[in-house]
Image: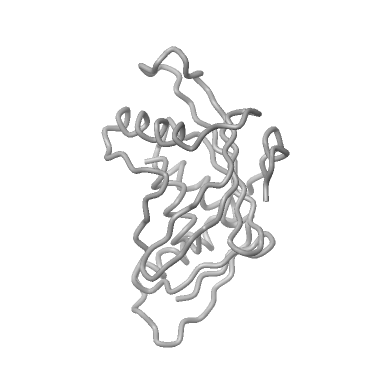
Length: 189
């Protein structure tokens, strides 16, 4: 579920940090911006494949509003928030707020955790994935295998199939490319 709410919206919805990203304040979200991207996602999912794809650009603010709206709509109680910062060359920084309160978790996992990450959105025909380069639990660097474990635990709690960090996600047939720029996302369909 976490992977689906982060990677799929990033990839099909329209979707360089070093240790300085840990502890930064996530970008603010104006949820009134979500409808434009939500409508675009619906169009993209239904669009036929085009011989001449056209670019559609969305702002970082619209993407974050859309992600917040998706979380609200899904009634997700484990993944509380996700915010992304977009950079040229498909580089992305992000923040994830996870809430394990009231769940049966190993004692070494905090009930509420913040993950900060940096990576690259990789796109190939019909698929996309997020390649993590750096990951922080609060302000401490964290090995990627820990994220796979968190995804697995979350999937067990949500009774869904676990997906690994390296998994490719299927894009809608019409999407031919996705690129990021400074605070913008462009989808060709």
